Structure formats: C-alpha cells, structure tokens
Image (cartoon, rainbow, N blue to C red; front, side):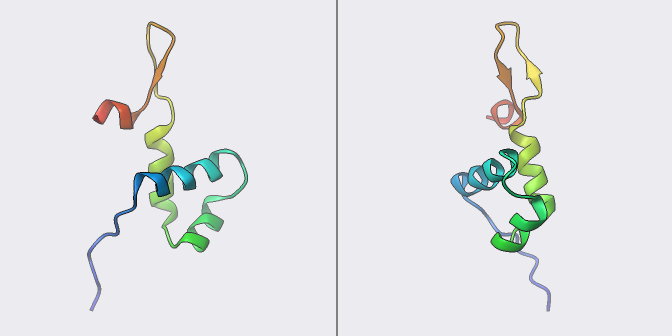
Length: 68
C-alpha cells in the first residue's frame, strides 16, 4: 500500500538545501539523492525564495515574504 502522507521539512532544513544549491556547490539531483528530497520539492523551495519583485525603495521580495 502506498503511503500518501507528505513529509514536512523544517524551514532551517529547506534553507540549508537551497543555500547549497544556489551557491553552486551541488546539483538538485545530488541533493535529492543525499537528503531524500525530490527534485520537485527543491525546485519549489528555490522558487519560493528567489527575488520576484523589486520594490520602489530598492528592496526585493519573494513568494515566502508575500505569503506571510
């Protein structure tokens, strides 16, 4: 029987994975294999913190900040 419950990861864990990816140290595939996280999840985490809007005061925002 397939388990349909999704895993929950801490914010710190997600940030650590995204940092490794964005700094160019690791590929999504290698992070996925090592940490047991799908590449789709990593991609979603990366997209959620990438700047998406330049504000009038010169600051940037991302999806995570908008959702809060």
